[in-house]
Length: 240
Image (tube, rainbow, N blue to C red):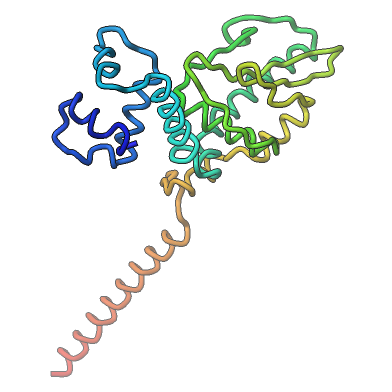
């Protein structure tokens, strides 16, 4: 990238550091902006006039963007799971609420139990969810690119109280399984708050009883030593 575009971009962007595009993060940030297709107010013609092929550069930008999403941000399965577990459990709770209502023939639709729930996410969030879902449900690891206006959809289907969950990413079907199996997989594989705290080294506010009692017994031992010491000093004073 630096060999092909570095010098041109450094001059166009008036960057003082000639090795600016030897840094992977700097390349990704530029490519991230480029693939947004946001050109309003930007002098894109400068790139063309400098001899940059837009189609070729765009393909390169997408390669870096995918690498940044899947290798840099979502490169660790356990961290992805911790990152996505909270949302997946929330989705499960919402689906469970609808299953309970439908099972009891309560066709209730309101702000607490809507027909559709929409979450707005960043591309990194979607990538993390994709990788986590593929891992949890033992799916083929395909690098679906989270382009702008992408959607990750979970549908609950009810056929005479036989519930099925279907998941899609854009036009790609992730899976179609029974609700009970969906529930079991999310419940057993999503991180609990305790697991999350341990992974991220967060103090959850619970009492460490071992440390607490060690501290208490330590104080008692110090006090006992102090009183014994004072008693011995008094006895020596009386002797003299």
